[in-house]
Length: 420
Image 1 (cartoon, one colour):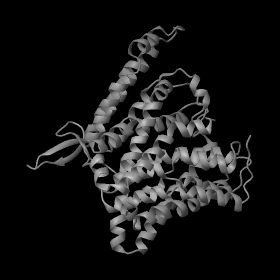
Image 2 (cartoon, helix red, strand yellow; image 1 turned 45 degrees about the vertical axis):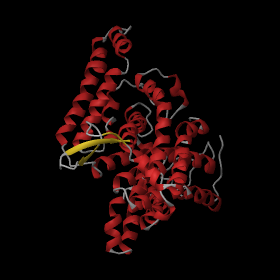
Image 3 (cartoon, helix red, strand yellow; image 1 turned 90 degrees about the vertical axis):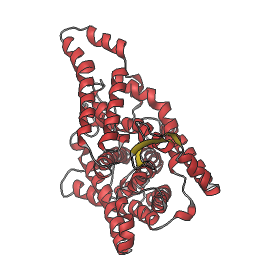
Image 4 (cartoon, helix red, strand yellow; image 1 turned 180 degrees about the horizontal axis):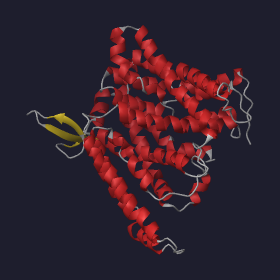
């Protein structure tokens, strides 16, 4: 497995730094912070958030917030999609076959549990509160892969089978989160005909620069045509296709941060999977892995900007949405993962990895309750900018408290650490 410290430094330290700066800035000088976040880069542009000008005409304005959340974060989601795609499609993929069944069931529980707790408590708070916060039901379904993996290794030890179980669950959780964003949180009125542009870009890039050269090379051990296409065009056909697909998502009304997802399956990939974020992938030369490695440093910076532009909430903004998000995560996640995982392992007979106990699912549930990155992202699209959105973001930030609960649960339930 990818060395945990390298993994966290590669994908999370910039994010943490950006979030801390945002919190300090927003509480010391909120006006200047919000001016920075909503700074208009270009007015009346072909990309940007859609709104009416003073004459009632629909125009797009590219703000700094839109540039990061809707344009640049597409690269982050593309990397997550690449890991999911390889796990599903490749030989030895971690999400293929019976071995992934129980983690996938547990993932479902880790989503339905938080939704039930969030909406249930909101209903108890009264119809006015329910109406104000109901659209945020998906915020506590998220699991932050990087931090949950780090905490999981610290609680269980690097060699414990629960760590791989947790990682499978976190990746599947993020895959489901992408579907939720696409289906339930459109960015504008839906115009699905624009998705033909995304589909056409993906299919065109796949046929012309992937399938056709390989087809023409049939029987040619030197793979002359494939090598020529790779050396001549490199990643550019897929970059152009990605831009077209992203634009199709923006115009279709789906969240444009998901706009690169249709292109990922079109890119030439490895023959087999080595596991999520496996160290061996450094030595693979397929174009998909090379593109992921090339994006590593840009995505680090993007995540830092994401934290800076999204985590800046005032502590005074805490409200019902804060506690609902937090309750959904630290109550709904462990209960849902335990219940669904037990049903899969025992009544359905799918079993759990050797060396794991059913009770370990409770600890995994607390670890998976660290929402942070994706929870912040969902909060930013679930609610309009304002007090409710800020309160929900505060709940996502407070989900770090689940790490403390994970260590407590590990001690109480007598988890035996396995380092090898």
